[in-house]
Amino acid sequence: MAGPGGSTFVDPSSLPPDTATAPLQTSPAGNATGAAEVAAVLGHLPLALALAAPLIRGQRHGYASYLVRLQAIPAEVSLSGDDGQPYPQGVARAVLLSLAAIRAADKSGTCSRVMAIMSVLSAAGVPREVLHVAGRAGVLASGGRRIPADLVDQVLEWLSDQSLLTFPYYLFHPLAAERLARDFPDVRIIVALRDPVERAYSHFKERTHHGGETLSFENALAAEEDRLRGEAERIVAEPGYLSVEHENHSYLAQGRYLDMLPRWFSLFPREQFYIAVSEEFYADPDRHVNEVWKYLGLPPRRLQSRVRHNYLPSAGMAPETRLRLQESLIEHNRGLADLLGRPLPWPAAAESIR
Image (tube, rainbow, N blue to C red; front, side, top):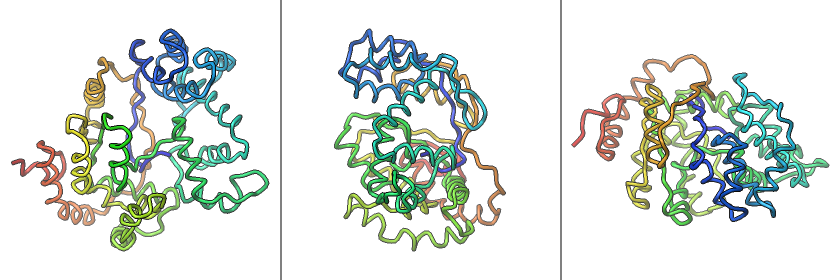
């Protein structure tokens, strides 16, 4: 599932051959030669490699089996994004093979139906609650069998493991940092921070676009405190609990980074973080993407595409609302700038770096 609307997505160039094999060599199946062969057929494209890795791990014959199945897909196959631009052939073939594997393993048809609903309703993402409703209505399983919300969530988690879905909720989730530190203590973490005011309005537009918000922006902000009351505490007390309100109606709360980052910094060394500022990325994508790649140990490359995805044109925020929010966030933005030790290109954020 895609995250709140208004984000910019850039499709990076193919990786150098020696780097491209790394995601595939996480699999114990096969050898470095097999990984290099698969990477070459996929054009060394990051998304294609991410899709291939879980399938290779799950196959008895590893790389060889994956190549046979991949090469059975016609070379002339073509897939396009919602912007009409064709995907590179390596990505298109990897996507089709992953979808075919899901259909083959999906005895109940639930995974296939979830993917079908998401592809029909929106390429930018579908609210989780819509899928929960579809499950209770008997839409997600053969024979009209009803699927409870927790099973729908298990399906979404499995699809995420297959690199077919992503979730942008980790920074804000009250248990995510502890879980990640427990299971992947050496992970490198990339955090993108956007002006909290603009982030809140973008989030609201995404919720409205998907039918998950019926209030005006101003009324939704006024209702936020009541909507979120007790939700974070319940998530911690009941680890399996899914809070629609906490994930979807936390317009301002998800932009109060000063409430989240100290928890993450207490669990991981600061050198494991790369903190990006969205507005700086928008202004110079090549420079900032190369900084990320350098942080990850990758060689510099030029971006081949700057197509903007997941963008929802709409009427602008009311000027008086923007001013009120900016004023309410002055102390927060100053405190965040102090925590990060660098100026931020948001109103009043850069005025106090001690």
